[in-house]
Image (cartoon, rainbow, N blue to C red; front, side):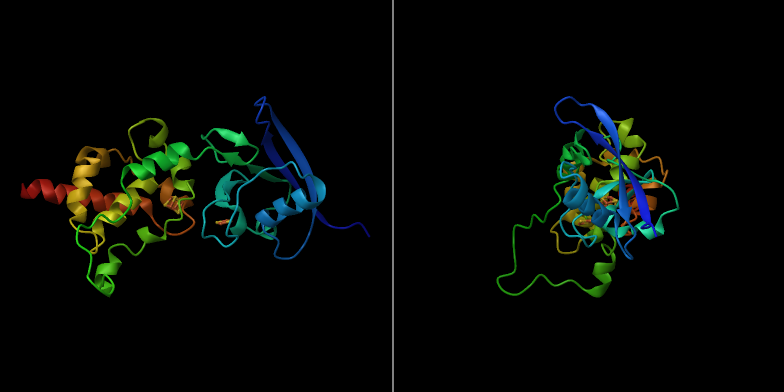
Length: 237
Ligand code: SF4
Ligand code: FES
């Protein structure tokens, strides 16, 4: 009896010529196999020239973000058996330059992310022990700390491509995280100084960012929290 297989179609791009091609592969049906494991199968047994990114294999590093059947997802989180019958279409993240095959240039995303200075900047640190945070204070950043910088929200946000100054959902979620973290000295003040209040008003509230986020960061809600803070601040001034 013929072995049952999945057909996978991958959009590829030659790094030297920029030529785009579509390659088809037949993968045996193996229970629990993820899209990432299927890509390894291809590299190990069929075509070693295929390029893609990964690191953790557990939905933690954000490296394996790509389009699977036209939806931006983490390849290590999607099992082939979860997908509808028929050819599985795998493509690189949209709207970013392709370096090779499924590997894209994340610099535009990272530059904007870094522009919010996503780190603590305390002048005074405790002489000993840890910087303690209460359970209640933690709720302010509970969701935004989950971001794995996969870029999914960035590539689906319509405003990112209309307004070059708009930071994008992940950067704004990071701004919320470092502004609202009780351990960050003058965190909210830094939000104003570093980012400028005006930059937070661009969001069109389309909500695609929250829909695609694989970690439940809910960037649209985080942007709203910044907006509410900014509005309250201007009322009090
Ligand atoms: S907010 Fe979600 S979708 Fe956006 S980069 Fe972070 S984990 Fe990825
Ligand atoms: S390999 Fe790290 S998130 Fe998929």
